[in-house]
Length: 446
Image 1 (cartoon, rainbow, N blue to C red):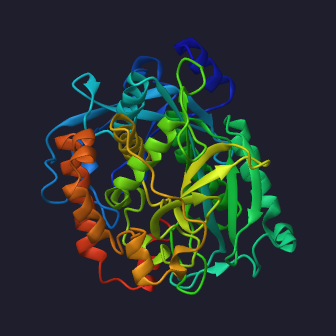
Image 2 (image 1 turned 120 degrees about the vertical axis):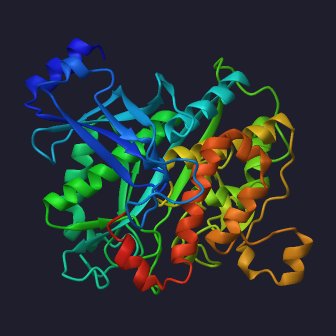
Image 3 (image 1 turned 135 degrees about the vertical axis):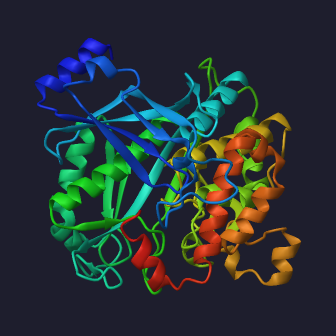
C-alpha cells in the first residue's frame, strides 16, 4: 500500500493509534504505538526500541547475560504496511508488523529478517515455501488465581455441544481474522475441557508467520473483550491434552513447473530430501519449534504430539506426518507436529526451512515410513529401525542446537548468541518448575 492510501484508510476508519508489533526471542509479542496525528512525519520509522529487547526472557523484563546485547544501540522498527490490520476488538487501534533495522539496514538479530533469509535461500535454489500454523488453545473463565483456571466447558474431542458454548466467541474471532485478510478454514473443539482448534489457510512462508502473530493477537483481543482468557501454553494441565501449533509446509518450484523427479515414497525427490533434512536436524530444531520448558511436558509418547523422530503417511504419532489427498493417490504436504505456540514463528519456520534446504542440497534420503504408533515398539525394535525420542527437555534441545553447524550458520553469529542466551536463561530459571508454577507464570504470556 502507498503512504497516501495507508493514512487515508486509518483516518477514515477512526484509528487514533497504530501499533507497531515485534515478536522477541522469548516469543512475547510486543508493540509500541504511534499516534496517527504524527504518522505522516514518521511514516518509515515510527518507533524504536533498545537492542537489548532481543535479550529479554519470558519471565521478566531484564537483559540476560552473554547475549551480546545491552543498553547501547537503537533499533528502529520499519513497518511492513502489507501487514496492516484494523483491530475491531480495540476501538481506534490498528496494527502493523515491523522489521528491526539498525543504522538503516535490516538487523541481524531480527527474527523476521531470519525468515526472509530462509525464503531467499529457497528461492535461490528454485523453490517457494508455503506454510501454515495449526493452533490449539484453551478458553477459560476469569478467576482470581491463574494457578486454578476454569475452562469454559467440560467436553470431549469434536463434541458438538461444546460449540454451543464457545461458538459465539469463535465466530467473533473468525470474523475479525477475515476482516484482517486471514481465511479461517475449520473449527472444532479439541480434547481438553475448553480447548479449541481453529485452522487458517496456508500462505507464503513470510505471510504465514505474520498471520501467526495476527492470529494470536486476535484470539487474545477478542476473548479479552468477551471477559474470557485464552492461552496457547503448550501444557496447562498435567492430566489434560496439551496444545500444539503444528507447522504445515509444502515445497513448490518457483517457475510453476512440476517437480522433475519422484522418489520411492510417492513424493517429489526434492520434497523427500527436504523432509529428510528436517528429520536429520530435528533434535536441534526443537530448540526453535518447542523452545519453552513447558513444551516438553506436552511431547510424550502416545499423546499424538510427535515424540519420536520418524515420519509416516497420516501418522499422528510421528514427528513428521505426510498428508495424503482424499483419494490417497498423492501427497499434498507435510506437517511437523513437534511445534507449539511458545515458538517465535519466524525462528521456528526459518530454522525448519534451512534444515530442509540442506537436505535438498545434499540429496538426503528418507528412511522407511512408520505405519503404527512408534511408542508401541520395544527398545530393540526402535534401535533396529533407528527411531529415537526427541529431546526430553529444553536443556537437551539447546545442547543439540549448539552442535548443529547448519542451523547456527543460518542464524548468524549475533542472532544465535542472543537467541541461545535467552533460551539458556529460561531453561536455568524454570528447569525445576512444576507445571503449576509454569502455569502461574506462562498462562497469559502465551
